[in-house]
Image 1 (cartoon, one colour):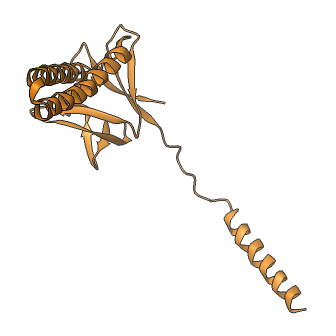
Image 2 (cartoon, one colour):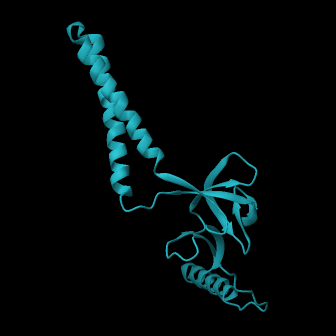
Image 3 (cartoon, helix red, strand yellow):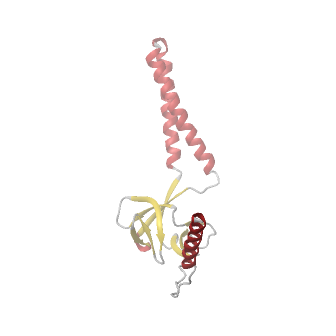
Amino acid sequence: MFRFILTKIYFFLVLTATCVGQASDSSRTAVSKSYYLVFYKPGRLNRFPFYTGQNITFKLVNDKKYYSGPITAIHQDSFVFWDTEISLSRVDKIRLENHTPLLKVVRAGSNLLRESGKLFTIVGGINFLALPNHRQDGLITAGFGLTAYAVGRGGKALQKRSYKLNKNRMLKIREM
């Protein structure tokens, strides 16, 4: 009998709790508009969109530093970055990854050169220190390793490009 009463109370509480949640709200809420940033060159088909949550790298007018991080919100004429609302008129440059067809080859080649450069530098250093008869070979191997690492770092530096925003390259906010 006690179990029967407890189950009835449980079902009563569950039923009343769900009925309150199903009541319609008398006030109408406005449909929020979704926006996104788009970087493009007028007359070209290539467009690079930036959505909320994506990383962006930009430079402000009269500032020497580039800022990089996720976009937390996009409004009609500005975007929110690090809890600061930034108007599009304040953005001077934008930095993008290179979008050429050979990007994957350049990225893989630069990573391969950097990692092999690290390995050859270590091997050359070990040969120079551990084997007194092969010091010249160790120096050559370490020199090749350092050269390969430097070329790999140079390839990584070429993967990003900065674009100055003007009438030829624009950053606009579009509605979805």
